[in-house]
Image 1 (cartoon, rainbow, N blue to C red):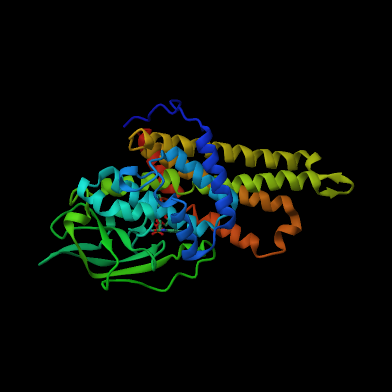
Image 2 (image 1 turned 120 degrees about the horizontal axis):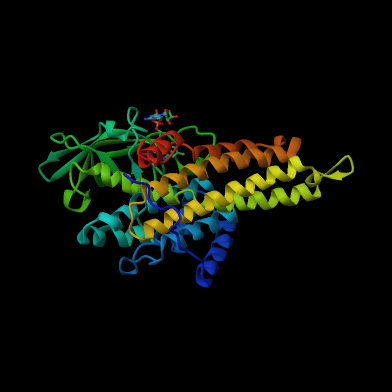
Length: 373
Ligand SMILES: Cc1cc2nc3c(=O)[nH]c(=O)nc-3n(C[C@H](O)[C@H](O)[C@H](O)COP(=O)(O)OP(=O)(O)OC[C@H]3O[C@@H](n4cnc5c(N)ncnc54)[C@H](O)[C@@H]3O)c2cc1C
């Protein structure tokens, strides 16, 4: 493996992209919580933005899509709903666009693109998180197709998703197999975890108990070759699922600049202290680095690359930057930061981003492998 030339990059935002971004900022400002929020995203076409128009989507590039999500975050839309929208669009729908057969795309994409069907990823198990190859869930034969069996955990939008990208294995095969499993009586979501942040993402365990699977419509990629499909799903997620955070971080940075210019201590505005201004400069540095890596990863996927390296770099940088910037924004406000529950919500929301779609350790291993280490 050789690391691709990371300097080869070419994206720019035209007026139409900028207009959509601005519209998404407005949408993000008013986005309701919960299912109503997902319905509102469907209404404005976000849930199918990069899906080809021939399948009912917006036909936009992933770079445009990232900019739209950045706008939603800038407007202040709930991170949990945007995470769930990202699982739907990047975790499930885009892999289908990339590797689904023509018949599968016709079957699933129009509903997914319009948001009448919302999907998510059901991969993680008690003994298979970072090491997804350890998945024990199965896709077994039945008279009329397959049945999905297994216990999944930390599934986003668990009790609301209509279809799951199920990662399992065929009993006769060593490799993983990915299949689209529709919600049925054989699928039950447990109680949502009492997570401290991202509550609107509805994280919960999901049990698949003989859930019917139609292999013609559901088998994604080849049986036994599901690791490649899962990696593709993760590449889309890693590149784009946190793009909305760029917007929340921009709003946070603007507020930090404003606060530092206004807050006076001992007759001096705190911005005149280099320790304060440099802290804010570092927030900007982290945000811009994460932003460039995110758009680069989106651009790379737009070109049809597998983009594993740029996606890992983007997700790793952005997730860590969001935590570091949230801490710096809090430090800046002194006691004011400690006055309300907002601090807990903010920190736990961004911390969640360091875990899903690959922890920093897992992403560092991917980067190291690309470097030949
Ligand atoms: C907000 C949120 C949303 C999520 N959404 C979904 C979802 O929609 N669908 C889904 O299937 N899952 C989802 N997850 C689960 C998530 O993908 C897993 O939690 C994650 O992959 C880590 O797995 P784990 O929790 O089992 O931790 P573990 O794999 O047990 O890791 C524990 C620690 O060990 C480290 N570690 C483990 N293996 C290695 C290694 N090989 N090298 C170096 N370090 C290692 C990890 O980095 C971590 O620090 C979500 C999680 C969160 C927090």
